[in-house]
Image (cartoon, rainbow, N blue to C red; front, side, top):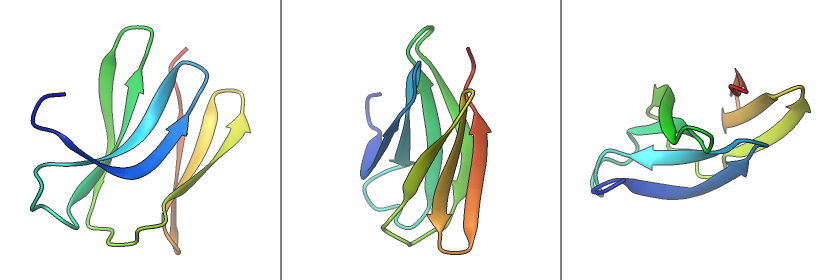
Length: 82
């Protein structure tokens, strides 16, 4: 995780964590939604975006599924690996 920068979005799942990651400290608003699996420490890049919206939020939908809102008009559903 060296030389990676993260926003204030954080959402935990049963086996990992969702984060907002930036390429560098000057890459705003270019960002990625990532998931880090704690079982194998694998980083999964879910989506690259240019979302300048600061208020990302997430909901646990159950059965390893999560809905992450990265813009008022855009939600991403992701099923975490078991």
